[in-house]
Length: 375
Image (spheres, rainbow, N blue to C red):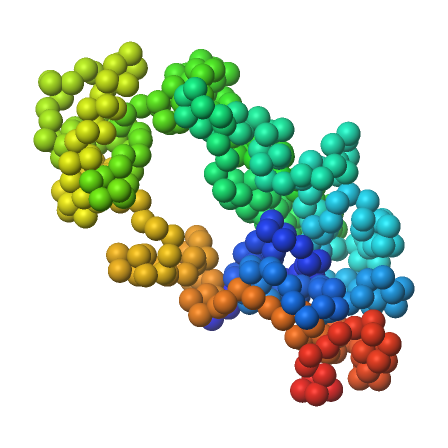
């Protein structure tokens, strides 16, 4: 069975979080993804499933020459460096696209390739802050709160980057030309927040106050509640029929409560629901709402045992699921990859001779842990 991205060759310059995630998605769906590591013994990247590694000392001119040689027959380059670093190495887009006009150069950065912020250090929380997205998240009257580093690094960064790569691959089928993708986390996170932006802009039930809206913690029917055993239930009963099922499960009637969309009474309803949820355990509430359309679910811990018991995947699996050409099985993958584990084999695949490979290893341009099996 073929894989959807089979035949696409991706060179991923080693980084952390967004770029490895983008590479992992591409590898999951069949692309050949080769991570370019420094000549070290360990890389803390845990998103390396289905990838291979070549270790190059990019401080040496011969390593730059070798990487350029590899990129001449690659489809995609994943660049996780700050703007200007690739150019300083002699690997700028002008050079690489001259070598290989079909190459797609995906540049992942915090604030973009140009502008006053482009070369400033930052992390997920900073990119969310500058994009305006962070101002939307948090309880009313409290500080904005960041959702781990999933929204900026992985959704706004890595996933948006993959979207750009796939669009560029499709376009290349028409034009025969590669291009440069500016996949910056600030713009990516902002794009993800298009819905609340346009809701507010058009005056559709979205106030300026954080935590007072239906989907940001203001509504009692779109909320998280603590149970008797100090676990939690998630409620998302927006539509009238779902809200009715939710209220029924609580042992209440709609006639005993203010109208669902009466925001002036949301806090009162929330206090009442909080007290009721605190009277039973998570397991008891799960049983009550099982097989109903109340949109009430237990909040599961993100660990293997808890999810396995309830029938969910123990290992985050590739999504979405394609019917004819699904992704590779990732259930037994650790996500960790030893630097240089496939150096000799990769170099051989890209046309270097055994003598050339031996010389690169001898001169410490390349670190290889597979030399005996590959030459």
